[in-house]
Image (cartoon, rainbow, N blue to C red; front, side, top):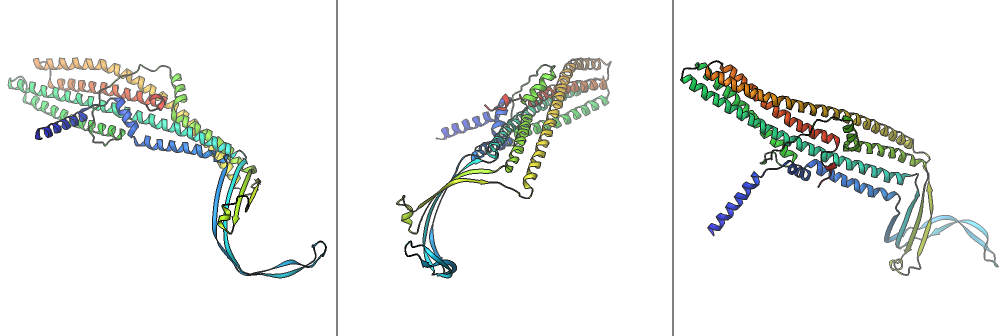
Length: 456
């Protein structure tokens, strides 16, 4: 039993360790974010609510059917009122010949009442309100769809930004570790040269200071890695301090040349811009809806009523104790304190504002695409330049070390060459990953970052 229990514990710990060590690809991170990101979940619920609004918009044209039933008792006190009563009757026809106005006294009364009503109403014409209400709800639904796609695209872009930023910080950490290793080697060489009398004691102290500075930079970079990992976890809907390992991925597209084609793609596919366009359409429909109050409302009705003081007579013998009313009803609001006029004017102003917002969004999108293209192409050039700089810095460092070893160079020259080499490595890493992040930002602006924003 003890052996079996220990085996189970070992298996569980092994599985737990494997789960913690399992690394995530960029695609894994995106799928995880799409399932757990709070903004996506919230907007999915809002989008589902807009589906219900479309269904509710058909209420204006569909018939309404109401049923009611009541049962109770009544009491009426003695009452008096004046009424015309016949005082002389034609003996042949039985019709009253002369009437007199007399005070009639009616005794108190009490009894029971039972009633059943069924009423059907059908809107026939309301100035186009029902039709425009449906169109308005559909436009709002399309705007909601595009908003959800925009949130998904933004989330995917954010995940990519933070994914590649974590890779960048990890790569910079490797650069700092390499810088510390170089400083440790240099300190070791300097101490040996000092023991042989080839260099002064001050060179040893300088090497130790250089190593201390590089270790400080290494500690700061470790913190940068932890911060990058925390923010990526937040994008994935996880606790910030959750263990996280990611697989290194890196690929860059070639330089973008045809900016006009990119702008056309952005205007056609950017979901945020398409949402704003649908809001303009919805505001146009809202203007049309505001005019419906100026037209008369026409509806048909049918009312079936059953009543009797005995409840069993209401729900039996259906050929008795009933009345049926049906016909047409028309109404027209003639004046309501200028409210209709105010609503029409406000809807027109809202439509103008939405149109202005759409045009401004389009201009901002074009400017963003142009800026991102320039940034991306510049990063590609910076990468090419710094690849050459890195090779030159490596050779400079090698030569500086060699000169120092044979006594024809100074430690200051070695340190300067080492700093230049580290800076060249850092600049190249930063340029590579900044280019990849800019590529994600550009794809998000174009609306092409994640399969048109549709989940798998």
